[in-house]
Each structure stands twice: as structure tokens, then as C-alpha cells.
Amino acid sequence: MILPIKKNPDPILSQVGLKLSKNEIFHPDRQQLIQNMIATMYAKDGVGLAASQVGQCLQICVIAKNFTNEQKQDLVLINPSFVKASVFKEWDEEGCLSVPNTYGQVKRYKKIKVKALDINGQNIQFTAQNFFARVIQHEIDHLNGILFITKAKNLHEIYKE
Image (cartoon, rainbow, N blue to C red; front, side, top):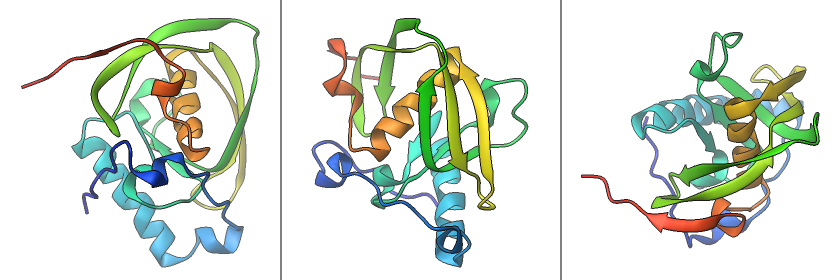
């Protein structure tokens, strides 16, 4: 099921998502939400999607599978966090499904170490770099109530037909 995307200035986008227990992850409603989030991400041409963007104030995000050679399936991150794995940061342009037609330059770490629970409630840890790391940082910001436009410079609009 394709879910409607919440748009700025919807108040849910500025809320910190609630952490899930392992038991909550297995609830059929949570599992269905995750599947709906994946379907919605692809239907809206997104590369990642946070639960707050579909009206759920939860620490869940999904990342499209085609951003690293190692990733064979869509990545589900529950209660994710990261630490920098390198001091190097890089400016690059970002956009967001919740802030349509708006883009700007955001400075993010090039390499991060990520900790989270997966869709099965298992602890996962991995290193992400470059665009993959950028997408994860963008989605974790959503889970903490932060929109990219608060970090961006050179904001501009592009209208697509």
C-alpha cells in the first residue's frame, strides 16, 4: 500500500521518533508499516524514507537496495544511530520527499559507522560511505525531527513536470 507523504510544515516532521522494543518490531502492524514504507519509497522515487514522513512517530527508516554492491535487499533500520568513521565531510545537494521541489547543499560525514536493529530485531553494525552514508544520515535526521533544510545552504527550487 502506498502511503501519503507528510509535507513540511507538518508537525510530525519535527518530532523525535519513539524507539521500538524487539517485541514491537514483530507486531504485524509494524511489519506491514515497513513493507508499506518500502513500496511508498519506490513509488515516490525516493532513496530512503523515515516513518515520520508517513505519519508514524517511530524510529524506523528504509533505504533503497541499489546504493552499495553489498546490499542485496532493501535496508530496514530500527532505532538507528551512527558515529563518524572519518573526520572528512563533504557538501552535496540533497532533496526530500517531505520538502518537494526544494534542494540545497548539505555537509555530511563521508564515512560513518551505523548501529541499528534490522527487520528481524537483530543487532546490526556496518560502515557506510559516500552517497550511502549521506542517505542514512538524512534519514536518521528525520527520525530525530530534523529536516535537511535546517542544515542546507543555497536552497533553491526546481519544479519538475
